[in-house]
Image (cartoon, rainbow, N blue to C red; front, side, top):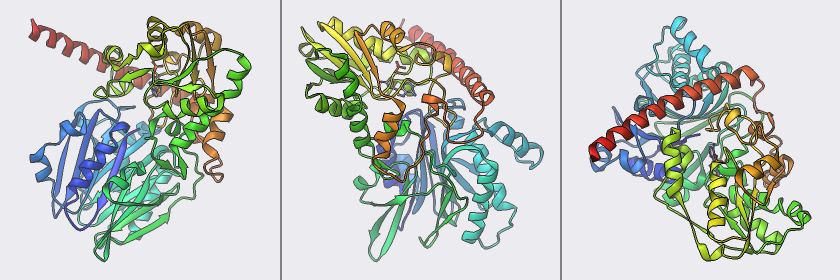
Length: 500
Ligand code: AMP
């Protein structure tokens, strides 16, 4: 997953784009980029956090009343800075695009683009493929005066050719902003508006946590298969280009999204509370004595609060998270990940000494974090350490852009719950059930009939997901990771040498 943003207004958009990306930083810390337009494109993108990529000088240069932004989280592509987004093509009109998701047929598409459509790609990124498919579909219509119909037709072609997940925003030079969601609405995309005198300015964003702090009011989620075009006079045109079946990623509610976001009419915070509550019956049945329920910060706080409430056991903060270290899993490469894990969380010892504690996390992925945390709780004097995961065991990878490891790396894919309990060193281990997690999300919006639960039980949103695609995804991922690790080790070596 990544974070995307677009602004269409009447004054320089850069402040909103920059601030908006800061608010969306939790969706990716690997690279950031912004493109604006005022009779000319202005682009700045690089690897790093938003605050490190943009400085006063670059912000001053990024002029114009419309623009798009992106924070990247490395998935199928590599984490080189050439793959930072937005991507740009100069024809037709000049189009910049930022993408959240992952195309599952990117390889075939890039072959076709090269050999049949004579479009050359500069990177291995599927987002560049998406941009080229869209640009080509627009170009083929030879639009001299661009109309919304041209855009909708081009997005219809994207829907026909591209498989997988794609929420995208694009800036067409001198024409306006385009935003579209794949026919399953796997990744979120929302529209907000703000008054400017008698007129209205618009923002499109991955999550509505961005809107209120920037003075926008939430309008609505884009529908699956829908395209919104905001023309240069700031008039909004919308069309469902392909009738879809909403089946968004459940992991957005488990972990990815900010707790104050509301996605497809379901509050992330409330869904997490309900996921925690759903664990209560199994823990009661286990008949264990617990003194306090302790969340593993930050994403499990709501679940732990819900669970503690239901169990009528006190909720306590037992860990302090160093807020200046990013989410460790987003950092590419194992070496960097393991090192930062040591610094990330510190125990508050007096909450553990002599107590039986129930630690709650949103998920267990590889099991490294849980093992370390259980160890910390014991070192801090806990008598018994129980562990609960607010989501079910992760058993498969994600073809739609969440950096979930290959099946072999997932502790839940090849071990029983009892084996995992032993591996993480807990006295008891409790997982939410898939149906309880789904229910916890769906209570917020009964119309949400389907959710992607592929990484939990193999039920992916799109029908094209085969074993072969998942295996291919795994091998791409390993190549990317190995390259990342090797590079990090090299950099570590270089750093060590400088210190000597
Ligand atoms: P681990 O089990 O050590 O891989 O780490 C699990 C922790 O990472 C949990 O606390 C989750 O909050 C968080 N996490 C969530 N999603 C992912 C992911 N895609 N990859 C790795 N860790 C994740």
